Amino acid sequence: MTQTTKRSSPTNMLQLPPVRPTFLSLPGDRLLASRLGGASGCSVLPIASHVFPDGESCLRLCAPPITGDVAIVAMLRDPEPKLAELLLLAEAARQWGAISVGLVAPYLPFMRQDAVMQVGEAVTARSFAKIISRSFDWLVTIDPHLHRIQRLSEIYRIPTRALHTAPLLGQWIAKNVDQPFIVGPDVESRQWADDIAASAHAPAVVLNKTRRGDAQVSIRLPDDLDQFQGRVPVLVDDIISTGTTMAATVSQLIDHGFPAPLCVAVHAVFSPGAVDAIEGAGARCVVSTNTIAHITNRIDVTPLLASAVSRQTRRIAALR
Image (cartoon, rainbow, N blue to C red; front, top):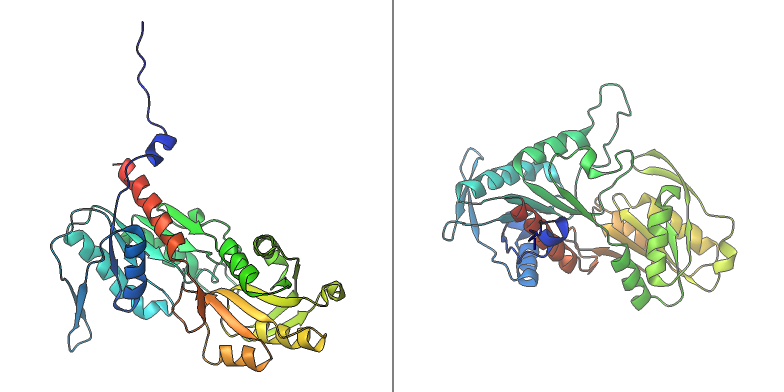
């Protein structure tokens, strides 16, 4: 009888024992790191940061040396002031003994700068991807703003995992809104809005939007809105920045005879005055996930992130 040896496969790799990474974070992101550590049963190590008179930082690990994999948690709203410290922390983690260093960035910046719009512009999405790919071994993020760049693998040279919050948004809407209908920001959001609507057990429509500048848009409502009279409009978007689109849509829906809409976003970027503008237009409330810490946070992405980090570290460990 000839014995056969069972070969490993991707399925076998996924069945390996869990690899528990150590979480580190930038100083302002310790709360999310603590939540991720609690959700995944992983350690969250304290980091001290001293700033010298010349503005340079010195990082110190307030714990024994690291002996395994590390996941650095960073909320990258206003990313440029944070970038140097993030890269220094990644390098410091390796000096402290990390085998691999991954990045957990729930909000991935620079993705809207994905093409040359005027002669001489840099495609910053590609520049940022190169910088991150040189310092990290993997990346986990949530609903990156993919448009002309359709997959993160087009610009990142490390394993990436883009998580999707449509089911979470839909579940929150189903639980908190009676008789909703979902309103997507533009025709490009059709599939995403439909996914949210499916989870919310609600119909969906999308707007006709023309952008003329960072804070200038024109909105045209669909022609078939009358069929949704009696329902509550829920405006959804991946990013709310200036709030211009949301505020204009809220006003038009109210003028059309609908009750005060709710506005739900994944990433609470919110430039100054954005929430006030949306609520001032008549919105019932503004709700976001906690990919960026904000007073509007109502939808928790911690379990989603914890599960993805566990899968990513297992894959990295299986390749060693």
